[in-house]
Each structure stands twice: as C-alpha cells, then as structure tokens.
Image 1 (cartoon, helix red, strand yellow):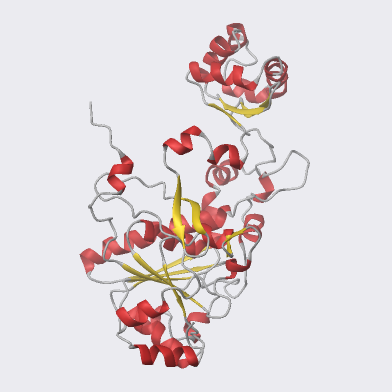
Image 2: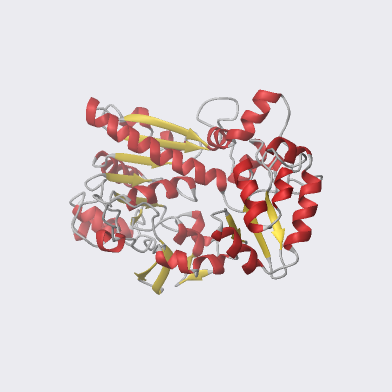
Length: 412
C-alpha cells in the first residue's frame, strides 16, 4: 500500500513550488485575469499586480462586506501577490511598466481592445524586445471579429453563450448562475494556456501570444449541452434541478430539509431501489428499468420518490445512501459547507495575517502536489503595498527617485 501523504506537512516543507523563479506582471482586474494570476501565484510564481494609484482594481469598491477595509471580492482573487500602484497613463508610468515587463516571464491583461497598444504594452510592441515573453490577453469577445470593441461581463456572456437559456424552472425566466462561472472557466483556460506556453518556451526558447475571450470560453464550457444541439438539432430546455437525459438526478425534500441525488445509471438505480428504498420491484418495473424508460416516465418516478423521501429525515436518507455507496448530499448553505468537518479535514480554509484586518480567513488552493507543493497563501496586497519594494529591488531605483515619482503621483 502506498504511504499516506500528510499534505499539511508537505506544504510547510522545503521543496520549491513548480513555478518558483517565474515572474508574472499582472495588468488584469476584476475576475478572470486576477483568478488566473492567483493560480500562478499559488504555484510559486512571483506575481506583481499593477493597479492605477487612486482606486486600484475595480473590485476593491465592491463592498460590504469587507475585512479591514478590503473588499471581500478583491480578497477572493488576489492572494499571494505583490501590489504596485502605478499610473501607466503617464510617460514615466509607462516606462516603469515596460521595465517591469521586460524583467518578467509572463504578462496577463484583460483591458478592452486597443488599451494596451495605446500604452505601448501590447504584444506586437513588446515581442521584438522581449521574444521570450508569454503574453496572455483576455477580452469579452476576442481581439478580432465583429464584437472586438464591445464591452462585456460574465452575466452578459452567460446570456449570449446559450448557458442562461437552460437555467431556471421549466417555463420560468432564465436565470444566471450566481457565480461568475464564465469568468471562472476563462481563468482556468488561461492558466492552462500560460503553463503550456511556458513548457513550449522551454523547448523553443520563444514566448508567444495567448488570446482568450469570455465568449469563446463560455461557448466551450457548454460541453454536452452544445453536443445535444449539434447532434439533435434541438435546443436543450429548462429542467430546474433535474437533468434532461439522466434520471433520477434531482433535488428531493425530506422532513428536515432538501438533499440531492444522482443515481441515473441502471446499476445505481437498482441499488437505490434495493438498499435505500427497500423496494427492489421498482427497478424491475418496465417504466423504470432503463435510463431511457425513466426519462420517458420521469413524472411517475419522481412522484414515487417524492412521496417516499417525505416520510423520513434527511439524515435518515443520507445515511442509507452513503451506506449503499450511492452519490447523495445535503443542500447546504455556504456557512454549513465552509464550517463542515470534511472542509476542515481537507484544510481548504486558512487563517492568514493581514495588515489591516489582523487575521483573515480565506480559501487556499485546491491543488495538491506531493513533490512541488503550492505556495502557502498570503494576504492579498493593499493598494500599492509593494510599490517601493518592486521599484527598488527589481528596477534599482533609490529612495530619492521613488519619492519623486510619488510626489508627481506616478506611483502611490
């Protein structure tokens, strides 16, 4: 038997994280870009977040709630970064931004089309001088095409990608996903692409441009729903908490609260009937014996399940499901999830020191690598917290030069 790994011991040991030595300059804000660069920071990269000096990342203003004056939204996507407050609208600010970029391996930005070119920080301008640069550009609709100039945010793209049309109860209004799900998918695609480009650079000695859009990633994320249309010519319809082609997959009520089950395969359904419901004859009923039959007779089966589950507590049913090795879980609030025994056991919430909040409870990376562990989480930077450090240590500016830049409001 393999030895059990103590992840908490690994993450406090001496091995270097996988991206140690990689420097990322982060011109992004809000969610997709910052979430990408936060993942790179988790993996050990030095991430320098560039923000405009007066207000910084727009998410700093999204409060309440806040911790020590720092917005919960900003705190969610900016851990383990260095913060530099720099006005790239000034010639001196642009020169400093370029100097930092020329000393970096990766640049990530998510401005509207044309903004980085206006600052002289676009890939075409930088690549001749810095041919090993990996440049990741994120936009709403892509840098080419009819909507290249259009602004867009996650819920707009949920609507336009087709994703929102499938949500909500049958016949009701479409609903957006409460999380910024397309931003999240885009951030994951961006991180994968940056890692792939760094790997390719190791072999070719050259960087490259990565171009991602929320539209592209949102459409790609529709996955099997897109395949449903492409193979049948029919639009997927609203199904509420159920699944269009897998039954039973849904939410059910008990005497003490809702729970969710996913037992669509014929094997799992037979086990559900035998070990949970104690009614094996239901699985032998021709209306329910195959998934196709259950899809056709969904209403009858759900009526039977609803009546049965309302006879006992949620704890009773979940104990039976889990004893039978069947997938089922309580519908939890956020507090119930984050304070649960299994989340604590997996060490998914860390307490980290913060300069204004004192102590901050925050999520940690879910990545677990046995030989090259991720970096322990550090507090997201205050606006301009590391400006002096970066200008001094990376660019060699002295205190007088830094003070002069601050007096002229080029930096904060």
